[in-house]
Structures are given as C-alpha cells and as structure tokens.
Image (cartoon, rainbow, N blue to C red; front, top):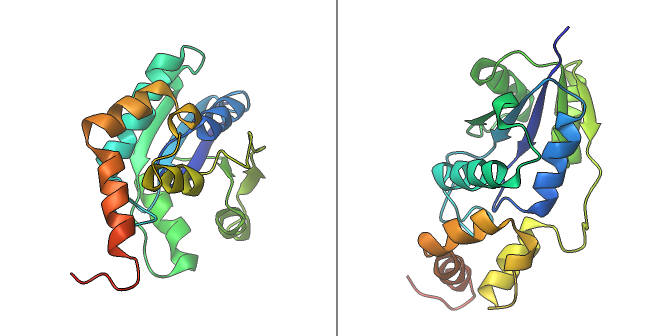
Length: 179
C-alpha cells in the first residue's frame, strides 16, 4: 500500500528547517505533496514572495540537496479561503489523495485532525532561528540570514531583489509612513 502525505506551509521563505521536515516526511511516506499555502499572497510583510518564487525556492533546494528524492515529491500552490473549516476541503480538491498531513502549525494540524486525517507535528530543527519570521526580520535589518536557508534559496532571493523587497515592505508598514 502506498502512503501519501502532505507537508503544508507558507515557506516565506523556504529554510533549512523546512528542508529537514521534507526529509522527515519522506522517511514516512511514499509520495509527498508540498502544499504552498497562502498562494495568492505576496508583497506583504508576512508574505513577501509570490507562490511561483516560493515554488522555485523549494524545487531548486530539493534538486541541490541530493538526499530528498524529488521523484516522490509534488509542489502545489493552494490559496487561502476565509472559512477555516472549509479550507481543508479546498486542499482536497487541489491535491492528490493523501493519508497523513505534516505541518509545524498547530492550527493547520487541528483542522485536518477534525476531518479525520492523521496529522503529525514535524520535529522542529533549530527552531529559535529557523523561522521565516526571523529570516525576514534579519533581511529587513541587514543582518545575516543566508546561513538559515539552503543556498538555492539565497540565490533566488538575490535574483529577484528579495531583500530589498522585504526591506521596502517592512518600511511601508512603519508608523508615520505615507503612501
């Protein structure tokens, strides 16, 4: 019997903790769908990168890693809807059949558990620093962030001028900023 899993996240940006979770999930399933959540969002403080940019970050990181069997992975963007209890049904419409969900967000895990799906909280890798919020904060403050992401992610962010985007977006939301 084939076991299919989902790994759900926003990946803003994809970092080494996410990569560790992909490997954790691949050790437990035959096929893994990486769900890029909040796919419709970009150019916001919590969501600076587009779905396409995030998919590219993930794909290039997995290709470069050498340990993750990319033949067993699909990457699918899924937009949000404003009714949490219906979001899992939207996921069901957009991804192949699955047996288990992996996530680091307890709310996401709860939503799938309520639908009768096995939900596993993946172990967190260096959680104090391996958080996309911390990485974006470091980008905005011009601090070292590149050690926290796979090299292909750093390359993509540089190519799209992503650090400048994060800095501009974070300044835009500061008190007193006039558009």
